[in-house]
Image 1 (cartoon, rainbow, N blue to C red):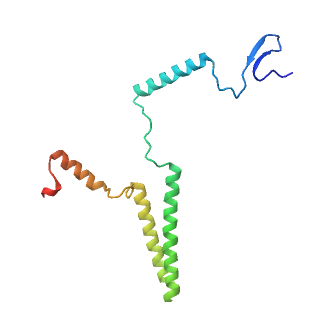
Image 2 (tube, helix red, strand yellow):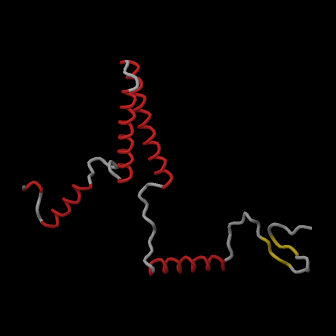
Image 3 (tube, rainbow, N blue to C red):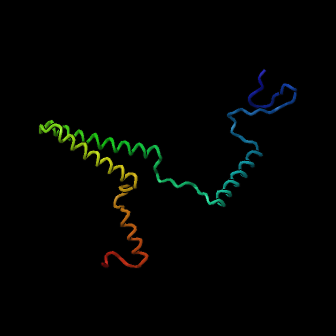
Length: 146
């Protein structure tokens, strides 16, 4: 005979036991207190050890890898396709297709470089200009004065 899933039941040795169904979300008071103490201890250990929550820059590893792959392949396909159709139209086989392959490769690697370094993430943002502005603000000078 199987014990009941929730409520009271008897064990094979005759003692009474309380069984909780797996769907019961209620925790006994002792477990809730233990959980609170455990969270408190972990938070204190993280703060004393200098650990903080990892800062997310909005990019996951898999998503970033997929973006790089798609950018590289798409640039190659576009470059080769434009070169192929220009070759068909102008009768210059295979020179423009090869030129399209080279230009597509360059465009793909430039896109990968920009994605990896974070360039082009927001409009008007450049690494060099920001650093020079920060230095000028510290020194009290302005670029417009020059």
